[in-house]
Image (cartoon, rainbow, N blue to C red; front, side):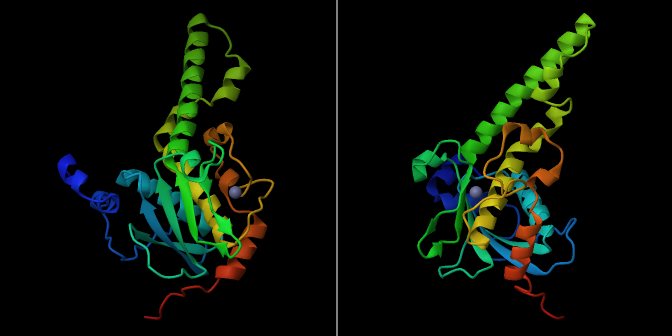
Length: 249
Ligand SMILES: [Zn+2]
């Protein structure tokens, strides 16, 4: 798309033009990698004000699918659109905003995502602040680069690498950086989605629903750090099990 054409379109229309898969209210089947038997479906209306590249959207969708697949829940995506009606209990809007949270919600600047609630429950909208995900990745880049340089310097001098360097970033940190922003967005999104789906504000001591993610988490290859806990799985299955069952063919 040329920039002049882009300038003449609304943000939503520009987002549509950047997506390569079917759009316009048509549901797109999610990849099913690693899911146990599907017991229900979460419907996500994905509104991307950041105009993310297709590859990044694919990565973040894949991770969200993995997380909820652990509870036997499939994720159905509708891109750049959402119904003008009250959403059902298995539906929500996931909105990616280019700014940080201070601008929109006057909250602290280190918030990656938010699931606003009011007295009547949730508006079924959750927001991820892309600028904050970029900030996180940038901190990871600094750490990774510092660790690579320290290891190279130690090797040149023929000395042992200081153990501090390993705490800074693992040797393979560079391999994680390419997909890191999308993974941060995905995990923040999944966290906020659970707040919406279960209509709860409280957090768990560990896993996806802990109250904050730490910089060191992003270099940890263990996906368990971002998975649902047994309690959350049970609650989600109770609430959403048998939602949108597969039509008989
Ligand atoms: Zn939270």
